[in-house]
Image 1 (cartoon, rainbow, N blue to C red):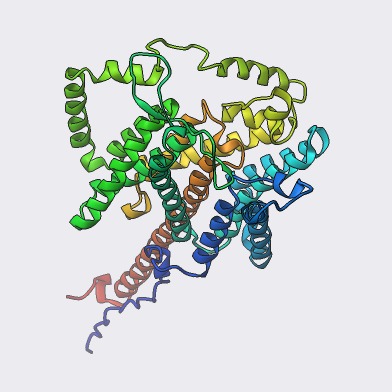
Image 2 (tube, rainbow, N blue to C red):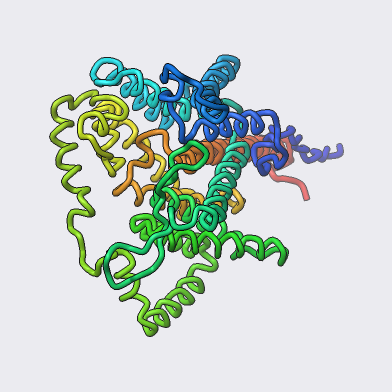
Length: 484
């Protein structure tokens, strides 16, 4: 009687669940509907900058065609907010996760400020107007992020707002020869003796940009241009970036914005250290350049440039006294503050410190919320731009942390993110961008974990089936042996 040889069991490989390819794809490059919506709404915000309700509140409005234009565009940010709300109503299912983050905390700051503007401000109409403009920024950002992956759309909005900043920088530079001595003056008495942008007068019915505002435009333009100059690419493109960088640096110098200059230096350090592979070389070159500048006596001249007089002003041109007044004002309404523009109405001057300004306007409730939100953004910005860098390096361009650091440092001596300002229009999309990057990296991580878990599950199943096959062969073979 023959012995039957058991045919080895063939393990069937079940098809594994496929990971959607678009989860790991690079963000789309074209300008889609959401990008166009975001760029259009952000353009409306810019068109409503440097105007106000005083135009239409004048009984004789409009005095002329220019006055009519300024009066109409004063409400463009609110138009952008209305369009943003209409867009969000269509995409309401995606709103909750974004409201439970920094954008929601910014929303809480704006709403709290509006409430205190209506109830505590001595000029509620103006306070509500500027509060509504600030709210418009938050609503527009929420409208942009209400899609599956808004990262590339936010990048385009950032590019747009930085182009606007560069255009403003170059326009102001071009206007200086035309406006002449009205805008260029010698520095305050001291040893520097250089010509500096003064920012006095009006331009086409608008208040001229102060020298610190001019410096912010110039610094942001330079920080955006520097990485473009450093990247490998076509010579013509790099020359274009080089021209923008040189012109912006010249504008920064003649603007003589001292806080902006120091903040710019911080931004440059971030750019030099952003790419790990080039970090050592960049810092070695920077150290060599710093030594050469020292040998040329640059630092003494820089000290004179920053102080203007050659002496350190511990009051920061009176800012510290204003901060003391602001702290005393805050404790009169600590929870909700006194509404937007409270520093103008109650102190008669600018607060010149965004961190204190948000507390005075919206109290510990609203001001504390936006400060927590910005801290969260900084956490994820450091995490993804310097520690857990994505495989796709195009998602983490160095100009983003550089500009955000610049605005953060500038906020020590200027109000920046506390109100509807050019500085905030230039940087607010970074908040949404960093959180969108975080969400994208989370999705990639979750998909990778699921894929790894699927491999482990299939490996265990195959192992069990193999064990069954071996046991079957053993039990059906003569003598309990597996046949040769």
